[in-house]
Image (cartoon, rainbow over all chains, first blue to last red; front, side, top):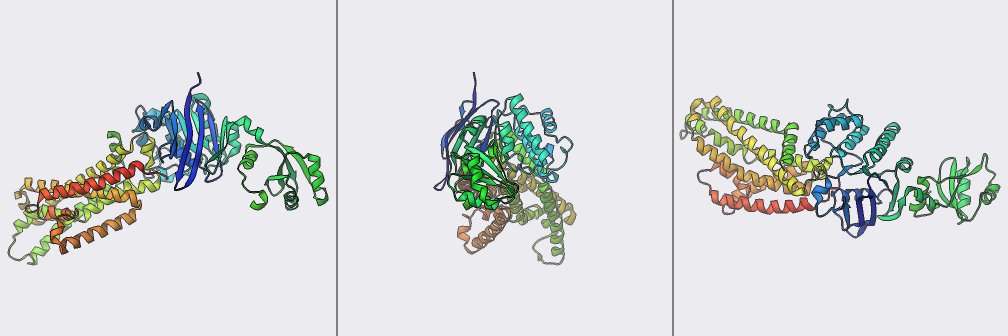
Amino acid sequence: MIKTIIRVDNLCKKYNDKEVVDNLSFSAEAGDVIGLIGPNGAGKSTTMKIITRLISKSSGDIYINGQQLDNNSNVISRDVGFTSESPSFYNYLTGIQNLKLIANLYPNVDMDRIRSLLEFVGLTEAANKKVKAYSTGMKQRLGLARALLNRPKVIILDEPTNGLDPQGMREIYQLISKLAKEEKVTVIISSHLLYYLEKICNKIIVINHGKTVYYGNTEKIYEVSKELYKVITNDTEKVLKRLFEIEEYEVITSDFDSVTVSMSNSTREDLMNLLDDLELEDQDIIKIDPTLEDIFLMLVKEEPYEKVV
Amino acid sequence: MKKLFENEMYKIFRSKRIYIFCGILAFVALVFSLIVKQVYMAGQFGEDITLKELAVQYPLQLLSTVSDLLLPIFATLMITFLIADEYNEGTLKLSILSGYGRNRIIISKVLAVIVATVIMLVVVYITSYLGSFLAFGSAVIQNDVGYNIAAYVWSLLPLITWIVFNFFLALYIKNSGIIVGVVVGITLVSSILSSMLPRLSSYIGTYYLKAIAASFSTVNLGMAAVVCFMYMFLFGTVSYVKFIKMDIEK
């Protein structure tokens, strides 16, 4: 029988009259990896801090392993591990001292566990250095090790790759994937690196201004997308100006050498004809499979792209 | 809660603050004894007091010197270290994330600062004897040890009240520098008020920081206990409720 490890029902958080989390609901089973994505200020970190009891909720219920968080908060919190986007440590202590201090608060966390976690995150050699000498990436790794000390059933990661180089990012996401697959840890992760989330998450929640814009399996999110085409050109300004004139064409994003367009009723040929008289050099129009980033931009877009540029 | 308390004590000792504070207190104890002796030798005390009397009184004299400024400031610095600094550095949340109730967390922090203050008082007591011995010779061993210890123990009462009050400040102000400024201002203002309004002074909590040490034989200990416990209850309750409900954003 599939057991729900975490369930959030109609979670709300209000600051003065502003709803920063508005009726958020989701659930996850053991081994699920849920990507929580949204623009800055959407309510992602607030949601995570409510689950970890750092801030209070205005209304709603949270269940961890079937137990309601309000009633047995202290016991239940031990099933949840958390690391924030800038993990905090006692800088006057070494890496291993920081872990020992927190391990002391849990039953059954011994030095073997600490050492194995340091090895897991690749910090064995730096363990006896003071944390103030650690790089951002090292602190992220130590934060992950600390979140795993008590063998949590749920681990909540708020931008866990903040400040890491590309190799470091890849390693962290591999570690997360391994945790979910091999140890059946449920992971809730927020990140702006949608490329990685696309690969490791089996569920996605998109929130904007506190409201849930999408919640469901990762495969299904692509169904919300219209057809996407990429116009490759050196003169993106001309293309953008032309596309802004016609409502049918919705500009999703543009780079220095391309413009991504979505359209419901037109074809590639229609688009080519529209841009024909611009006499663009080295122009090409290709149909693309939408990425998670493309869909995310479509879902959270509030104003037409022309106003943004 | 034992483990929480252990962690708080570990942090106090590892950060080396307590060693620095005890070092300063010991230094003051030794240097002050030499200063007192110089003042005596210059005839500033008049003929009413002998060197032997100075020696015997020195432990309490030192306590009254440090009890209304140095000890409270050091206690304040430890509180700001465990609350305000931890909040700003983001480590205050770590105990909460470990699954401990906030009531236990705040009590363990208060207890840790009280224990650290007791340690500092013990250092003051021991070094007062050393200082007296250094400056005045062996006359100090003729003092009433029980009386002195009682004075030192009673002086803990206003210090604990001070500690609880500072927790209250730290939860609302969350900036170490401002808190230290505020408490220095409070001690100054309350000292002035106590002088200007002697009838009201016994109702001012900070009055007893010095009064118990300086006038142990004459101060109304019952009144001191009532006033201190009232302030402890008031600021303790407000601090407790504040911490339980506080959103830890950092």
